[in-house]
Length: 275
Image (cartoon, rainbow, N blue to C red):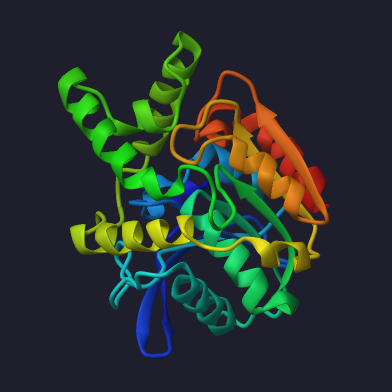
């Protein structure tokens, strides 16, 4: 079964309904997918998820207040991490791997710090440590891309996730086509309230202190494109420098969404790292 046909499931997490979808054979240590600013379940690239699901059990979910999940989105990364931990515990898992993209990479770091024993390995893509360069500007970058997209008749992700080269824009078109493949049982679009809370959380993360990262002993694969305009690529180098057990992979001619542009290579790297 592909991620595009995976049913949307719900679970009660401390009195709030959380939406999630699963891919891959059940069993072993599951991979929890942690998503980006403005994203809902339908924003996970099915090619990436299906590639990883050949070998792993994956679970994508809408955190509190996001998409079709209930409750109100918190305005701090630490609270988002606490909600993610509650969701993982509600599913009955005591050990997970994390794949955090962008804002999800912030949440992954916070989960590992709040509940280190819950996490086995982490993949952090298109992300940054607390206090990272340019992170507090992400809201302004988003606004700029919305303006450019409107003027060009394009999707904002053409500007936010991919390089402006012909390769990058072809990859953007292919990625957006994959996101549109699911025709039924689609998620609820993100609300403006949730986007506001997420931007507040991101801005605070950009003002934060990364010094505790040197205590995060988990194996981490840090991934990005070489020209990330949302979480500038220097932050991935900084994450790899600060984390004591990190590997770094930088994709050429790629932006924030490098893992989607190079999904086949990324899947190979990720499965090897998680094995």
